[in-house]
Length: 404
Image (cartoon, rainbow, N blue to C red; front, side, top):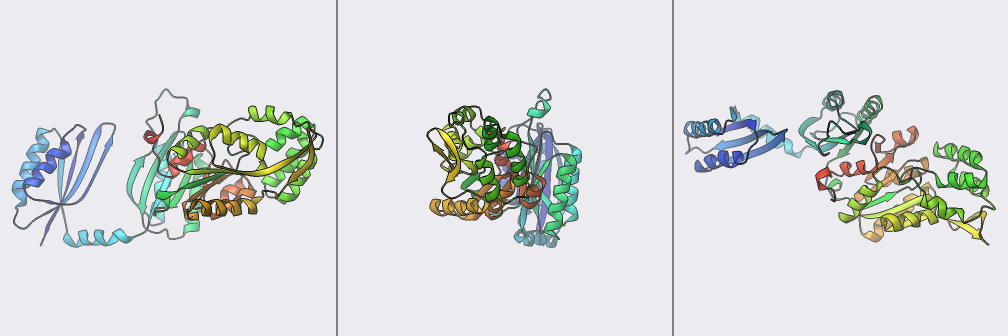
C-alpha cells in the first residue's frame, strides 16, 4: 500500500517557505502528486500532496518538516489520503471545466455566496478562486472601482439553460455581472474582437445627434429606440431615420465626431488588445465617417458601416451601398475571421442592440454591453456594471498585466 499524505502549511508569507519544505522532501526522494499555493493579504496557504516511496519512512520525514515549519513560525497539518480516494480524484481530471467570472464595482460576501450556491446546486465543484482585479483602496470613489473574481469549476451543469437563467437573475438582483464559459483552448486563444459602435464604443447614437442638428431629434430617437428593442425591422427604421436628415449641412459631422463621448474603458481595452496581438474591427449600423474617426483615434484594424450620401455639402437622406444590418454584421464577422485565419470560436463580438444579436450568436464569446433586456437575455454573456475594459477579465486578463 502506497503512503499518500497531504501537507498543508499556513502562516505569514515570507520568502523561502516553499523552498525550505520541498528541500526536506527532496532529501527523502518524495514524489509530489499535486501542489497549490495562494497568498491573501500577506498570509500564505501552501498545499502539497506527496507520495512516500516504500523505501522511505514517513516518520523521520514528517518530523523534519514539522521542525522546519516551527522554525519558520508556520502552522502545518498532515492528512493521510486513501489510495482509492486518490485514484478517484485522478479519474475526475477528464471532466469538463468552466469559468465563472464575477464582476462588480465592489464584491461582497453576498455576491460570492449567491454565485457559489448556484454553482453547487447545479453540481459544479470549485477547484480554484482567483482575483483578477487589482487591490481596491478604501479611499477610492465607489463609481471608479472595479472588482473581478474568477472561479474555475469542474463538472457539467445539470441544466445549462436553468443555470444561465439563475445567474442572470442573480446579476440583476445584486447589480453585478456574472459570466459562465466553458474553459477550453479557444477561451485562451481569442484572436479577433468586433464591436458595434453607437452606444457601445461611444455613449451616443450618432444618428440621433445628427437628427438634433437637423431639427428632427424627437422623431429619430423614437424610431431608434423602437429598432433597438427589436420592434421595427432595422433596414426600414434606418431608411426612415436617414430620410429625415435630408438637407443637413455636412459640416456638422466633424463637430459631432470631435465631441463623441467615449465609453468608459474603451481606450484601455483597445490598447491592451492591440498589445496582445488581437485584430479589432468596428461593425456598425451607423456611419463610416464616425467609424473612421474612431479608427484613427484608437487604431482599429477594420471599419464597416454605412456610407452617408452627401451632394454639394448636403446630406441627401440616402446611403450608398449595402446597409450594415444584423445579418450583414454576422457576414462581416465570418469574412474577417476567414481573412485573418481564425476560427469563429476564437472571436469576440460586442454590441448593445437587437441588430447585434446575429454576430453575438456566432462569435466564440458574444457580449451584450449595457444592453436592453431582450439583448442581454439572448446573448451568451453580458456586462452592465463595468466599462468596456471589463471584457479583458472575461479572457482571463489581470489588472497587473495591463500596459503601464
